[in-house]
Image (cartoon, rainbow, N blue to C red; front, side):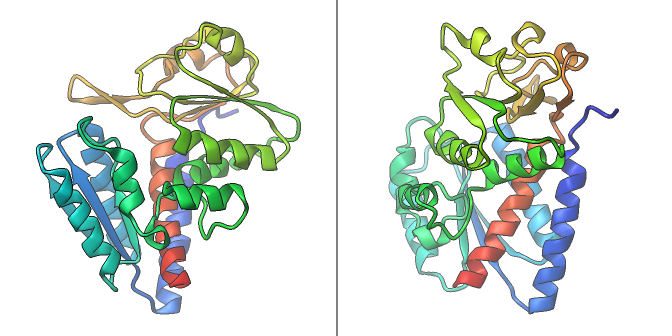
Length: 277
């Protein structure tokens, strides 16, 4: 049995359906992405989002800013895009350089144009089943998990992450499917004990090769959200893929797993926001 959860192949299927929908409905969704600084992984992701957007027929605009740009300039750009009738969706590529107030910048986005679903109002609406969109990263992970055709009810999911904006909607999505969910900080002293209990282990901590073979359960499903560029050449995940591979039932590769699905869900949500407008 093939152990690899191929996010690239699934994403291409989804992108083709988005392309057909845009063509059939004669719409021209507009997506704007703000990229601050020179983070290699962020630049890589934005380039992939640009190519995919243009391929399906989304009007794509990127706003590239140096890492020493005044925060006011970022906020002014968001304000302009909030007012722009041709912009249906706005994304600020994360992580921002550490000197910026990420929460303030995300809050500046019009919730109706917040394509990541990270605005506090949108997270609140999502938790209360009132949201227009499902945050793209958790939605992409759900699509990958569903692709396994495994029964999810009463299974134990463990999420290793520090990020509330990621973990809150991810927990809800899984609990809505009757899964037991545990959120673990990467620095938790009982991390290994908790990850070993996971039927589905979702890892998003930004630490290359952080999860080792002795930290995963036999025949578990591993979703590796990590994107870590090393030696300026290689992109690797948060899971030590080669050591855990023989032990697990299914695993997402890096690259080619969660990344392409996140891009596909970005396009999906952009179209949804355009339709909602």
